[in-house]
Length: 170
Image 1 (tube, rainbow, N blue to C red):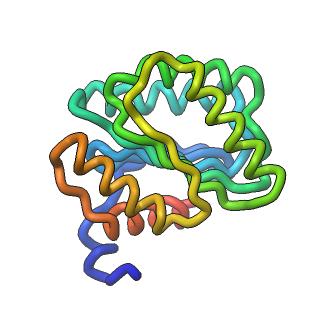
Image 2 (tube, rainbow, N blue to C red):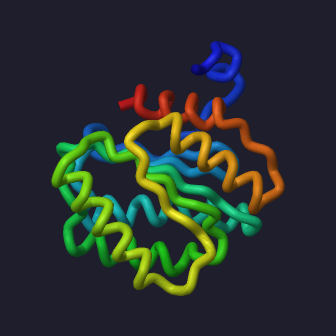
């Protein structure tokens, strides 16, 4: 459970927002992408270009959290190509990737399979990916993984508050 103190301690910086489509934000070395519509190549290129400076600013490691709504569908072929390129480019600094799938059934299974398959064919990596259906689970996991790899203590309540803040902006 989040306390008011945890929610008020941190605020992310929005890098890009396309209403009803995607928001990209970050808090220091934690990046957030909130998908409200299907990822196409143009949107994914913009996400890539917005995340590149964050990756360059934190060579010791960046963690990524994607929140995806069920109605968005799977990324199109162009978006998958850009995502594969992003995975390769960011592989050395990626600490972990958490994908919160706000849905279930066939869609969630298909999205998880698609992203897992892309990760498997990406360049060698030391990062992990998880797909919980709840934000608190991803906040705990990202906080733990990020602290282990970067030696910078991250509070899970802060991450959960940032995810809620990002979702509220749409």
